[in-house]
Amino acid sequence: MTNSTAPASSPRRRAVRPPSTPELPNIYPRTTIARLDRDTFKDRSETFPIEDVAPVVGMAESFIRRVLGNKKQLTVADVLELLDQDAFAETFVPRSRVLEYLFSELDATERDEELSDEENWSLIHGDFLQIVGTLPEASVQCVVTSTPYWGMRVYKDARLVRWADGEECAFGHEQTPEGFIRHTIEILHRLRPVLTESASVWWNLMDTYMTRTQIRGNAYEALQAMDGRNRKKWGDHEHHRYSAGHSYIKDGEQCGIPALVAERASRIGYYTKSIITWAKINSLPEPQNSRVSRNLEYVLHLSTQRAPKFDKAAYRRLAASLGGRNTLYESDKLSDVWVIPVSSGGDGHGAQFPLALPGRCIAISTEANDVVLDPFMGSGNTAVAALSLGRRVVGVDVSQQYLDVAEGKIRELEKRLPIDITASTKSGDSGRERKSG
Image (cartoon, rainbow, N blue to C red):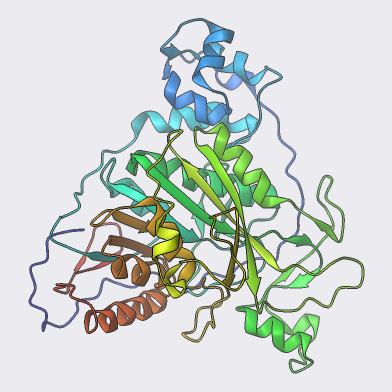
């Protein structure tokens, strides 16, 4: 959050808008065929810190020392030895690209921004992978977000991103579920430096079925189709996801994405504290005859240490609308099953989560004035929950339209809460727009 200099009445200045939504390809789940080319790296003499290698090869530093001895710097030969271990498992870079990635990281840029104690909120327009590198280390106490789900939605102002695994696509529009998992883990990896030691990450996501389907813009379109009110045929939709071509997931099979994300998060150094089941009230029906209908999503609770900051009592203190106990369905004990109504979605966002969900996460893992970060802010419910609880918030999103909605919610909240906010906007050198208060 940069220091605010413009008076509250000044007009907002806008950064140059990025190119319009790119032409997104259809999704064909064809598994890439690739192998590690050892000859490419045999003459390289650079070394890598063990703490940089560990999350890429998915091994704890203690295990790496069992394999290689007590080393702080690892050679190319050392990394190749780790890649040959039975314990190796892909994290966010495929085995064939691990060394290429490590070499690219030797020239990492330094962070250049600070968060001001005088500001309560900041909304940043841009791609999070570019933004996260500018946030100061150990500044964020809590991350709460609902990311795109794999192959289910086309989001406004989607951007093509060049990922560490070599794929170039919008997040959520990968060609395989493995690609989506890798990219999710890459984002979580980039988050690590900005988290405090006692921080929590609350990561809301849903699983996907490997089925031939149209990729819609929001849940309302799906509901219309189920009710027979949307007469569009397969070819009438702009984006499609196919179901043939994956190395093993078959047509009609569930992908198991949430559990795989949790497992890989552990491999890059996070503690998987809980996989929380969000049992949704009044969720959309699923007209399926070969399986049960889904009525749940998942929230991964991740931390950077064994015992993060945690206040269970907040669950009993809060109003249900802000994440407190739902007395109709939940017991007095805070468990790993949360019964929370879904959002109405009335502000134009196709997949927002309800205010009570970020409210609960924030309340039990932060204190007053702590910084909350939402890498996929959307229409701003995380910001509303954080500010209502007396926390500061940073929100990032690629859609200026969603951020405008989020700012409108914050401005409305100003009228009801004693929050001293002065608006200002500045254009950054990374093609982003920042609005602060």
